[in-house]
Length: 370
Image (cartoon, rainbow, N blue to C red; front, side, top):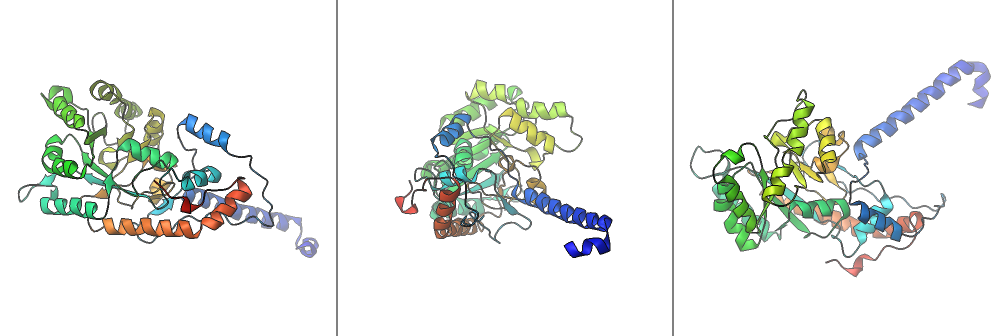
């Protein structure tokens, strides 16, 4: 290019350089959309302690630096879904990934959304026989249920959960559905169901608070927020109403259950960027949509393009649909097993990357996991 400057002129050269810079900028922008790195809202004390205990990071030698750890890929997700990572500090991610006290690589969460279980022809909801088959199939495959707080701990810092974890949601105030259809399985398998609870006019419904409190006291029901009035948050929804929908349930939860919810289940699966930011501001650690993108893993959330652009994957987690999940359970297990196999196969590469970039050594995978 040096020999062409006199012939082409500096003006043309500047145009060429500007074009190259523009292409570079576009490439970086697209990469940011796909990976969607965010500053993870983990517990400050835990994060600070982890970094304080970690060794000083060396300066990598550009001649011998190994490739960074690869992101697991699969073609078994819902069409259009792509896995998104959300921990920007790779050293911290690898420490938590390979800590033998944490969840093993390939650990999956399968969240399932329920509303009703049909008892009579013509009723809405999942077929009763299919519902029972799903529960039995999940148990046969080795799934165990977890609470919303366990899921948040796992997603934020890879805290231990069973390798095949299930989240059963019953949306709206459907205590009879929980008691009649879910409770026999909850007691038999020692499982937990999550009641996505709407505040609305609960105070005006005689006995309703008492029924959900009694269900909660069994130890098999985890109650989380489904909004103040079950407001569908769409473009044009007033900001004041959005804040009320997200913040409003807190006093009721504190009065009736003694805690603030950690999960927000978006009414109708609707959200806008402002609402996602307010949910984070309110202190919700995780949130759930109604899109069945696939299973969830640590630092690996399958999302659609619109969800990826929100920049906060933990507040837009997918949920499978009740009437089609039974066939998806073995596929979710397969995804987890393949992710685990890739992790073990790439362990030497990850250990070398950690040694070069972070200092110290990762514990070997043969150490075992809880």
